[in-house]
Length: 125
Image (cartoon, rainbow, N blue to C red):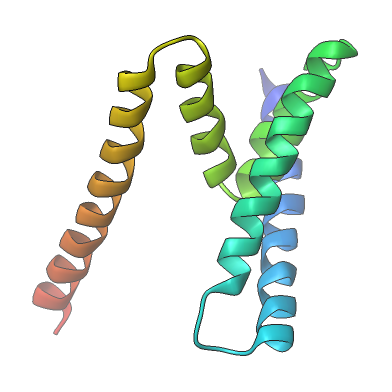
């Protein structure tokens, strides 16, 4: 368990650093005004998650899953895990459950963010 936790922590540091550098690079290349860095990490992370889930299964690399998928990609973007979960539900034939998961995740996350903003503004201002 401790070994797995260390793998996740180290991978998370790599992923978070990559996310930061991607955001800096996107800001320098594209300028402010649109969250290009966030789009980039979400797309790149989702692509990497799709590739890794097949490659690790194909080549027996499940022992690298905590470091690569949970750590690196989790630190880079959790959107990749969301994407994998949604597609897995769809591929196993649970189309309505996949659609519900997507809708609930987006709606509830945006609602929670707005509630957090309102609460912080009400308490801290």
